[in-house]
Amino acid sequence: MTRPTRCNSQDELDELLLSLQELNLSKSISFRTNYMQAHGGFCDVFMGYSSKHGEMRVAVKRLRIHILHNRDVSKMIFRELKIWSTLKHPNVLPLLGYVMHDKYPCSVSQWMVNGTVRKCLDNSVALDILEMARGIAAGLLHLHQKGVIHSDLKCDNVFVSDEGHPLLADFGISRVMSASTTLTFGSSCTAGSARWMAKELLMVAWDDPNSGKHSKATDVWAFGMVVYELATGLLPYPDLRNDLQVSMAIISDQFPRRPPSDNNVCQHFMWSICEMCWVTMPSDRPDMDLICSVLSENPWNQIYTPPRRSPSTLEIDTLGSKNRCKWIT
Image (cartoon, rainbow, N blue to C red; front, top):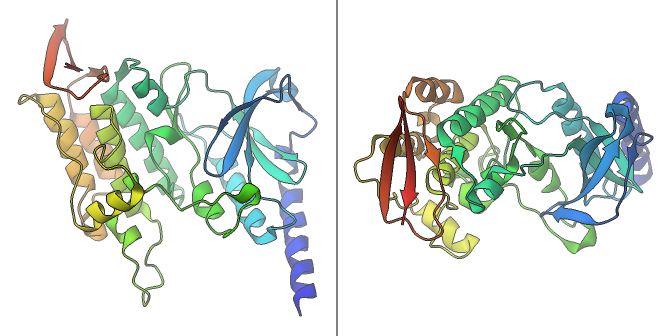
């Protein structure tokens, strides 16, 4: 009984791969080092070069899933790659293609020298936080308009382009990888990260087939946490040490502590965006179209410099016609 199912599954996978041939960069990617540049919960990242793109330096992200051992999950991954390849927006990281590393699928995108927004915050790189928030919101709105749910939005999954613009990445991948209960190399993956997860993702109702599933509303909640990251430089719930504590706080309707603002307009504004997104009832949350509209109306232009320790006061200095705010300690 299982034999036909396996054959059908393999046939479907072969057909899907055939439809993605124009994205196959297996003959174009070369490596000058086998050194792993980074690794996460479900992938390992290597630096390569694409001859098809003028020897462009690229990020080759190898997913920890063997296509022969996990055919159904592999099909889901390649479908996500196909969708990703169709998304064209200034705030979405473009997919250049894919390669196979042995039997492990790898996505290929341009190497981002500046790294992620999270890396910039941790390294005290000056960022225009309002433009970052606007760009991330615009990218997320584009995904939603195309029927795509990000599922794992956080500053660590937003890259900074050479021009300083935010680029959304890794949308949908964590959700797909969670479909595999046992991943190769012995790691496991959850559909999203607890600090950015909405309450409805943590409170599963067994009689509701949509319970625990990511949605546009859960993306909106996560966007509020991203704004919190931008405004404070901190991870959500910075005083809580593990995901269990964070999950209990979210279930108990406890939000990240509001940072001191000294009645500063820009900080009040950023916090108001967070509160818009952290409404308990998913149906009562605004959509990204409304959030983009609100962000576009704000006249402030802030550059945030993350603190090296907990912020104590907020300083505002006026440079020409632009007000820039930063934490000082």
